[in-house]
Length: 328
Image (cartoon, rainbow, N blue to C red; front, top):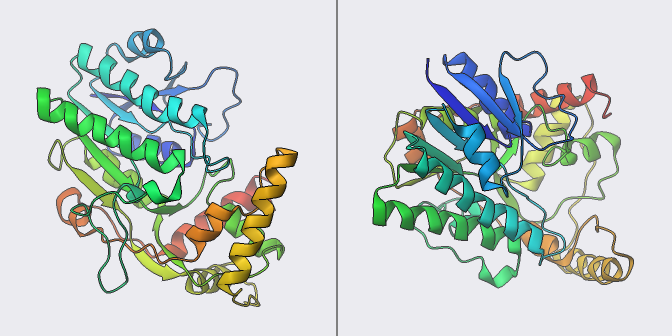
């Protein structure tokens, strides 16, 4: 049996990837941060190693004996917009994983990037892997670091043939969101603490579908290429309506005018710079919430056999996991 080394294995996507690897008959070595309580991997027949992607010696020692690497570990913080730690983990950490994998002659590395490394489009003309990155205008280290890590890997492949494939997820919803991260929207809607929805939208995808595409990329797809892993392009109103139905809640939200969203974001950002507390919505987040970030996943569906599960299933998985684990 082939053995797969998974960084960031205890996060929402990493946990789903570990389960998909087991389902497909792989051995799993999960690489998680030291001194961290891990609950999302409970009951799985896997090997757990502790370390940090910022330590190349740790990576090298723990990666020995593995056939493949799936690099999930990343910081997704978008506040503050400029954050040296985000760059360090997402860029330097990726470089360390790549170099360790190269030295150990790993068969293939699958890197988890972000759909935001490509320009988004509209519902009629969604973004795809041929469009250039246009995220510099937002001034966010998260967006820039994910793009620069992708660029590093693709250049490495072009110059040396390094066997890497990049999976670029859109907005994932599913179980094991211990953060919580994307699922915070579900919690806020259930508790009725969300003030309303904006005029924008996103491409939403079940985390299980992304996990399937990631594991399939170990033996499918073309090295040196990127694959946007998404599914449904939805306005926020459409998403929240679906989520309310799944949770058995009455949809009560009203649309918040864009100027008001931007004003609140600007005020929150100003206050947070003084108090050093993360805002519920910053100016950068407000700008994002007001645009339609539509993408196409046709390439991943065709070449990686990526499923397209209705987003209601991901919402249900997320909601049920939150209920079972005391988040609600």
